[in-house]
Amino acid sequence: MYYKTVRKADKLNKGGILVSSMDRVFKKEFREMVRFRNLHAQKIKLSDIPMLDKEIKEDMSKLVYIKGIDCNYFKELNKKYGFYIKKREMQKRQLLSDGSFRLDEKGNYVYDIIKVPNDSVIIASPTNIKLRYGFKEEGFGYIDYVEREGKRYYYYIIPRKYVFRVNVLALIVSNTRRKVFYKGCKVVCQDGVERYVYIIPYKNVHRADTKILRYFVGGRSLEDALGYMYMYIKFFEHTNMIFNIDLSFLEDGENLTLKEYEGTIEGYDFIGDSFEKEDEEDIIVHE
Picture 1 (spheres, rainbow, N blue to C red):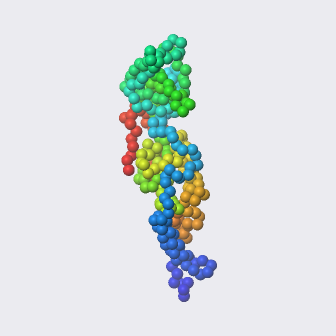
Picture 2 (cartoon, rainbow, N blue to C red):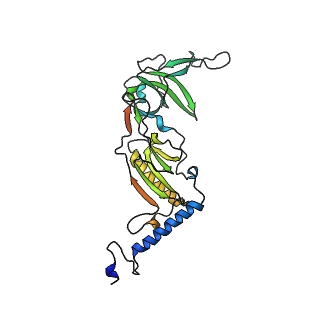
Picture 3 (cartoon, rainbow, N blue to C red):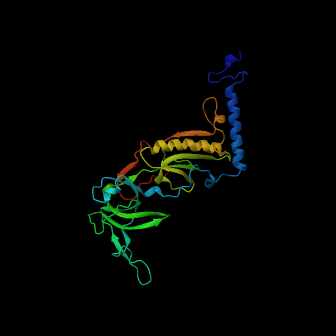
């Protein structure tokens, strides 16, 4: 009679014990343990979360892609990335005939002020196009170069229509939920805190409770980001930041350590609009 009263949704293990009952007990004990650790365990700081890669230092929010130029010298920038510089004028060091820079009596550089045409923007690029001295073309120009962390960047003036926004993706871990994302999941950590791993537009990384794990650029960015998201979750498990995922499954498929979320953003193109089409500021979706 006992077996006949068992609901279809319930299953029995080899000992005749209801699996659903066992799951309810396990779920209750798991949640009690998480609440206890939330109250008493030392909290994991975002800055202490382990990384598979080196720390992210670059600001990718101004990354651009250049294409369509048919002007001599400047066409060398086609199909290359650069960084948008939000300035309408810039200082240019005065150059002497021997290739050195002019200095004043105190040994400081002497500058000219270069103004940018309305239909052009300034781009910083690591590519040296080896522009001929005195070369002129409407809408184009060279300003100067800078050295940063052992790398040289050249400042060019380029018409807006050849400069395109890049939809950089960021893989992040956060203490709070997001509303705008491509893919996400919630993980329960050993300190009793629920944290969230998301793939989001890089330009939306603007909150203090967020750590960037990696950014992605290119046509396969979303696929690469998905692969890295699952890789990081396994890495968190391996480093004991989160509970064991396989041991957290219930009979109905629910996992007490990991919960995945489908994205709220549909479609992905890694090359966006040109600077000719919209205002120069990236549009940020605030949450």
